[in-house]
Length: 229
Image 1 (cartoon, rainbow, N blue to C red):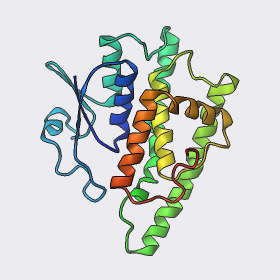
Image 2 (image 1 turned 90 degrees about the vertical axis):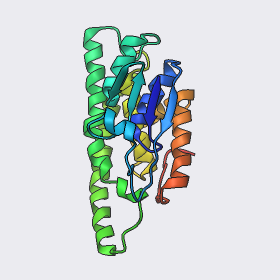
Image 3 (image 1 turned 180 degrees about the vertical axis):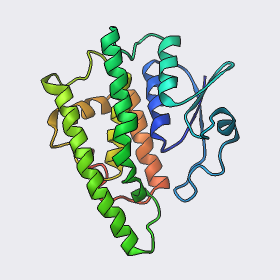
Image 4 (image 1 turned 45 degrees about the horizontal axis):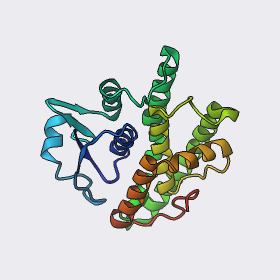
């Protein structure tokens, strides 16, 4: 398998975690990225494979796939063990819904923080407006974390075993950390869940690579990684 990934692509890194957790050998092609130009010029293979021109793109023989959720579902079908989806239809549906919540709901306020890693604008008023938007987004992220804490409950787990939902939510919370978003201290069970996953080799490797990529590619963010040493 070949995976076209990006150093600061949370969706591509989500696929990398799944591949590592399933112990699937793959060749990673890291496409070029800068904060100033993004992924331009676009990688030609990615442009042909994905109408949106975005990573991740997975090639497995003659099959080429894009979209992290589609890729994870393919990996689950093609390489069922170890499973990253629960066994029962109801639990599988709940897992898919939580993954969707991460990918499409949690990402919305997170986008309002992403300017922090890029060049600071000369217009200080514009920067102040961005910060006001980030403060509002931070309140929504904190509310999302509170809801996830309720889902975890006293059990402290979303499902009996690691799932695609865990991976997707972890990636959103990791990016919240790198962008100086709200701490998880207000939701101790979610913070404990995040810390436990951070110790798994697949998650730890991606976490560390992203932090290293930030040192090379991103502007320092005040308050980044509030819950991580």
